[in-house]
Image (tube, rainbow, N blue to C red; front, side, top):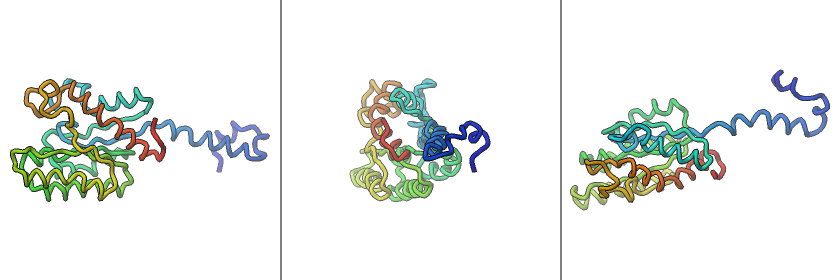
Length: 224
């Protein structure tokens, strides 16, 4: 049934032939196309913005870069400082209440810092990815590497989690979220662990191509 406001806007002459269909499609789908893509960023203090001035957090900078590229996006900051993969899993249902189109998962760093068994981290991340897949939420997985002082066996098992899960669930993987930033004092805060605003810009620059691919996947069309 044609809504009265739309029917009243169409001249009687348009009810002949295929032109009516074109008009109706144009009127009905334009709002959907114009809606911004909603991206949930589920993570730790790296996402939350620990120690950073307001407005320089990764989700804020990423949203600004996307808009500068002509992509209307809202990046939801679902980062919790100190959160583990288990914590991320426990609050996922609440985070999905915003009905995101896509998700960026940045979890696992605190697991490694606490020496949590890699098998447990893998189990938690697997559950997160499975739930996102069931909800048809396109996902980008940001990888992490274990501190090397935990020993080669731990590092090997932990580092392998991310490529394994990315292949298993068919999601895009950015191998190491701190690539180009880790261990560089010019790009980190005094604690040597959290990026400063300059480090955030490097992270966003490097993940941006994968985020655009993520958006294209969420929309079923190539993002520009």
